[in-house]
Image 1 (cartoon, helix red, strand yellow):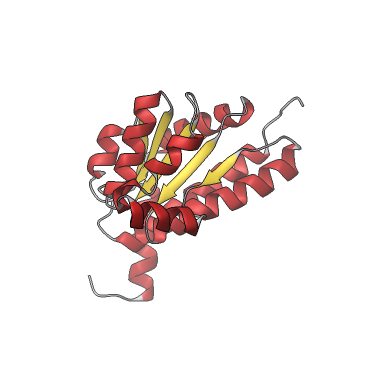
Image 2 (cartoon, rainbow, N blue to C red):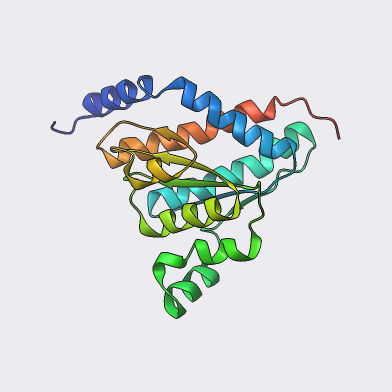
Amino acid sequence: MKFSIPNYIKALNDTLLNVDQGEILKAIKIIKDKFINEKKIITCGNGGSAYNASHYITDWNKMINLATKKKFIGISLNDNLGLITAFANDINYNEVFSGQLKSILNKDDLVICISGSGNSKNVIEAANYANKVGAETLAFVGYDGGELKKICKNSIHVKSMDMQICEDIHLILGHMVMKDLCNTDVKN
């Protein structure tokens, strides 16, 4: 389809309306449970998904804490350029996320893997490591879901072959999580 503003808005709207709301509710419940139980919530992704991973943690750490007065323990593996480049240069780019997880991830923490295609090798390695140590895994994927949808314990699948539509909706999903968790009734 040829690009036009109305076509893009229609494609975005149509795709968003077709995201499984049950998957969204389940993902929010998983994230909320980890928050309430003071587990780490860790995100990772490449390219635009890296920015979404960082954006989620920025919003969630700030806004959820302000709204609930409860600590939100969120970490984006994309935010430490020194660690990313050290793993990429000294070991292998496929280990830039799993390598970081080896020093911070505990059983029952949550790793959120974001990938438009679902086939990013370094994100897959992070999910595999998280599964191996008994952490919860949640994929935000597009396209056909790729390998991530198969290996993560839970997923939200944006059924579009347009990377920008996938990234747009993944960002919207992060905002939905924040809005819901800001309304969480917690006891300090």
